[in-house]
Each structure stands twice: as C-alpha cells, then as structure tokens.
Length: 343
Image (cartoon, rainbow, N blue to C red; front, side, top):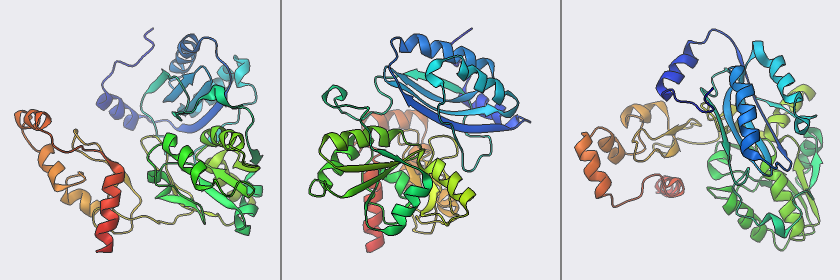
C-alpha cells in the first residue's frame, strides 16, 4: 500500500461532501521520545488509512500532535488501534466544539524536527518541567478574579476572532515569535501568577517549561486548552469567559464557543469572524472577509489580487517574474486595516 495520498485535492473534497456517514473530529498530542519517527509514522499511517481516517498528524522525535476526522462507525476500532502502542496509554482526546464532520479530506502524516516550530534549544532547559495543569473550572475561577496575568499563546489571527476576557494577545504570526515576546513583556513580573492557554494545550506545555526556566515562579496552564474548557464549562453550566470563536487548523477554520462575534471584516469593517484564504494563488493570505466583500473582491483580499486571479496564464507568469511586493503578509494587511479604520 502507498503510504501517502496521490489523489487530487479537488476530488478528495468532492468525495468528502458526498459521504453519507457521520465523522468525529478529535485532537490529541503527547510528548515522548521516539527512536524511529519515520518508522512510527509509517505504522500509524497504515493503521489509520485502513479505517478511512483523515487528518493532519505531525510526528517528531519528541512525540506526536494530531488533529483527525474519524468515521463514527470506526471510532471504537480507532481507539483500539491506539491501544496497540504503549505511548498512547491514557492519552487525553479532545473533541471538536462544533463538528460537521467536514474538517479534513485526506490523511497526512508528516515527520518533522519538532511538533511545534518554537526556535528553542530544548537541550538548554528541562522541557518536562512544565507549569501547573489547571482544570477548566480552576482556570475559570482564576480568570474570573482578574488578579492574575492571562496570556494567549496563539497567533494573532487566532486570538483576533476569539480569546479569554482580559487576556494579553501578542501581535505575532508564529509561536516562535510569541514565546520570546511574552518572555520579554513579562520580564519584570516574574513573581506574579501567570495563566497560559492555547487551543489544545501543546503550545503551553513548551511555553510553560521555558518560562519556568527563565525564572517565572508561578506558571499555570489550561489543561486540554480551549477545546476542553468549552466542553467542561458547558457541562458545569457556567458562563464562558472565552468570547468569540476558537480558530482551528482544518477546513472549518473556526468553531464558535459562546456565539459572540468580536472581530471585523478586514475590508469593510463589518462584524465578521469568517477566515478565508485569498483566491489569488500567488497570495493565499489568511484574512477575515464578510460575504459582501467576498462577492465584491471575488474572494480575494484586494482589487489587485482580484485582477491577478483573473489574468491570463502568460500575464500571471509575467507578474511572477516582475513581482515587486510580497503577497501574504498577514500582519501588514491587518495593520493596514486598523489604520484605515482609525481614519
């Protein structure tokens, strides 16, 4: 059997939409030492391809990080497949907040140097000496008090559409940038209680260990991340302190936690929290766009990108050769939008 996909993405998406059965969207991660990441990658690909599982899985010498879509009829068998490997024993599985079963359309398992590109020298500090894990209820109470430093360890395009009330949301595009900025930002407050959160917890594991290494005395993290918080808070019948939408790295791009829309279309400023990728293949910028602007700009981030998208292939080739500006700079795009709103 081939251990990779060879079918065109368009066909795969059509097949997904035509499915008549239900799927579950889940995520899980675990840090552990893998002596043979490539061999492990091939083993789990065989197991999960046979079960018609889709998803994006990263394997590294330091562990696994997985977001997956699994047919409900195969879910128990999938759990049994996890039980084959001692490294998955007792691994916490997070379930999607909103799940239409259309989160992934193929199975991708990649070997990477790290689970999260953080730019840190893991040999320079103890990556297992992480912050205190807080349950959703414990985290909720501490956020309610408003007495502690609350930090969103996600990228700006994630926190823009949803975040915890009162959180510090750094203006960064990558985790590599954010971990350094947060450390510098809080350098004079190392004795304060620090509360960290992210989508499922994996970024906070590394961030909390790094902050402790840098001398922060009281580092805490939301165990299970926003996904687990949303599930438990609903069960406890508590009003969510997370407002807006939780960004997810699959076809859905987001799932609402409390029904609020807190962000705006990057082109006209209307309330909107729908992320899209610019339809200009040379740009592919991730940005927020309302339906009206999607129609006006033909799902592009600008009139210029709309013109490029509609150009002939020779014109596109010429544009590639003579391109004077860099497409896809999300931070520049977002900053331009904020300045335009002030004017």
